[in-house]
Amino acid sequence: MHELPAGPDAVALDFSAEASPSAAVLAATDALRDARARGELPEVTDLIPSAHTLLVQARPGRGLDELGIRRALRRRHADPDADPGLLDDIVIPVVYDGADVADVAATLRITPEEVVDLHSRTRWRVQFMGFAPGFGYLVADDPSPHPFDDVGRRPEPRSRVPAGAVAIAAGYSAVYPKQSPGGWHLLGHTEIQLWDEHADPPALFAAGRIVRFVDAESSVPHTDGGRG
Image 1 (cartoon, rainbow, N blue to C red):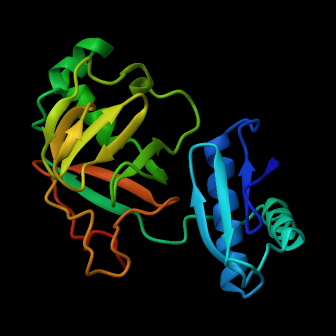
Image 2: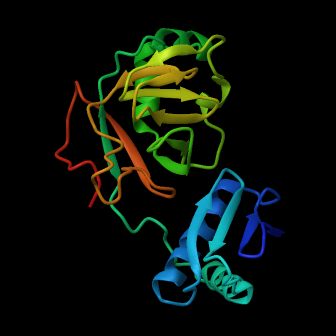
């Protein structure tokens, strides 16, 4: 891990040299959240993870307790029983009727049914949030290579992707919270609401959460969407 200055009241923790940068970012995010919940880092206001870095932001003028940050990270690293998955999995029922299922199947040289099975049996983790409110970039929780890594973005993006569209691109999966342009391959759609400005929190997804997609046409488990 490298510490990169980000102004007087913030630091960027860079994990790009780690064997699994995304896993290291998620572990560090959980460690600092736990420390903040215990009152050990009262000056920290925001933890903003990305693919390879974690931005730690303090209140303006307060500065950062960098020793406290390192102490929390060391404690998490030294605890083999530490588990970031303290919350229930978020279950997303999907109707796999997307316009690009056949194209993805052709790219991978498998059947459309195998595309659906591969997507729904993968355990996904929210790596970071971005692009639009409530939009989470999901990666396979298993660090080994995933077949969807070989499926890039569409040659031409669509001008309108409907809210609830479930998609993949470059090893990521996502659900579009609102209608927007998009260049990912569409596998299906869900009725689950990803963003509600009146809810607390407004986003269903958050970095580190586990997401499971289930085929809504084969079985729909009882779920509240995982907001609890």
